[in-house]
Length: 156
Image 1 (cartoon, rainbow, N blue to C red):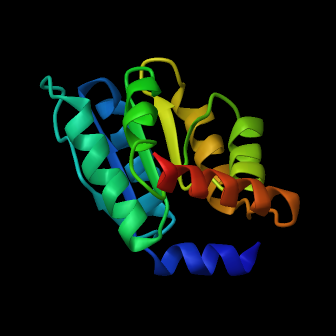
Image 2: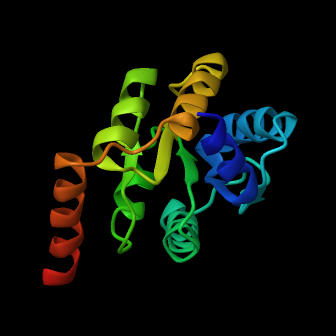
């Protein structure tokens, strides 16, 4: 997985949250900065109430355009994942465990990790983030299924 780490260091990782995910976003940001990963933090920068759909849309748009990975956080992770998945080319996965993160990348080729700031302990979040970033997409039947999802995006 060393090659994947090099690739991730070369790309910008999109990071964003609403007020409910702010504290965990800041923790994850500091954690990733220690690893010298390139991060584009789209905010928020306080716990002042904001509208998560605006933040999720901007972040998901950047992930889709830049063909990179993203991490979105809100109170539960549900709102961010719903909005992000409205953006063509995005496959956002709400992950509560390391196993979810691994399978989301391998089987679903997820490009955005969503976390619940009010429900995910920081140490677990670090493990989930590491797994998400280090896991490679599996090919074969999984690629066929992802292509089916992409075709659905064009049919509605």
